[in-house]
Length: 483
Ligand code: GLN
Image (cartoon, rainbow, N blue to C red; front, side, top):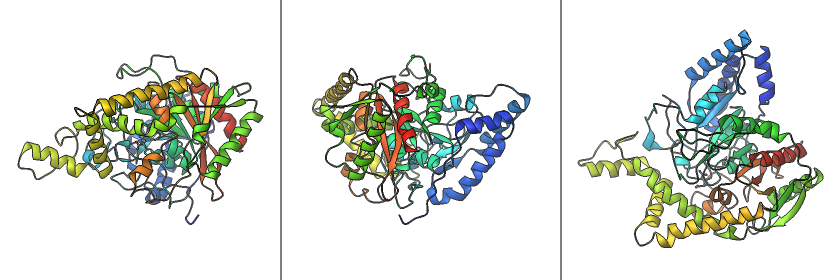
């Protein structure tokens, strides 16, 4: 490793919250020290796109006043949190990593933003990401790449690269990201932090700038499993503003995660340990599996035979939905408008041509093609049928096991620029994450050792729909075996 490391572990939520409740720590003081650290390290890492200081300090002052009076405090009282810039915050710039949204200041809060604040969190600012969350390296941001705090020559993963790097570098205690095909799990794995893919519908998407609506999910990042679980309990639940959100009751996931893993049945799918898997990653995951056995789990091989169709299926469904969702960026309603157009249709096409980056344009074209008359049945419809087969693989397997464990990504963090010339190689690296996205099931990625060069390896733990509690329990056991 050639470069300076910016890694620093934040204090745990319970330590910080205890400090604030007892008056030893002030929420305003914590906000000040986090903004100081952001000033020091953000120029090197490019994690924050904008800061929301006024709102943060107003909130922190409210928390300090409540603590001084002995009023009850929320579960995230005074905790500094960062928000991926595809989620809207009233009055703050929302770019989605794109030039086309430059200058857009949304007039409302995403439901998850409002919930975090109602729980006492201090919202520090908006985090860099791939443009419209399309990418696996954060190199598709119109505002420059994020650098991995572990090794700044390397990518932090994507698309929620800023959300993962912020926690790894301790410029937020926790963050929110989004995951459509792996964008929480893969960057968490690359940066050595915990990331959660909640079940589809578990967390409201009201106020999320949509990429692919049948796949998009919002979830937390944190430095340890328990903290990530606490955040999920805060943001999960039904939202009347999001018809796709589930009415199922929300568990106390942190308490659930304390329950241990004795007797849990763990499946290991052969399809995730084949060609293309880095030998060091394989070795660390196998060691992690051994530690689950020692903790009292039974481990058995399982098969998810349609895995090999997952990449083409995902890249058809996701691009088709993206082409529809991104039609709204027309130079009229939001953000950027091309200054020089003689006609209305020129204005549309120039605004989109100048406003969107290369990867977004590639996906709009792929998706439009897949949806067009004459091709719809051959591509989009077929992909939806394969999607069902992929989901059935998981449903069948979860009749026999409580959780499935896999590597989160086939390699550790790669170098900046290593895959930018080859979009297909970039897509193929999503192989272990897109399957759960297509199936709608939940999962957690947890640090599981590091390579000889010191690069973090993540283990992905998948569980059935709405069974986040089990994924957290297994993740806690893997985490405990690391220390
Ligand atoms: N890397 C995948 C893609 O580029 C996933 C992105 C995401 O989950 N937002 O589509």
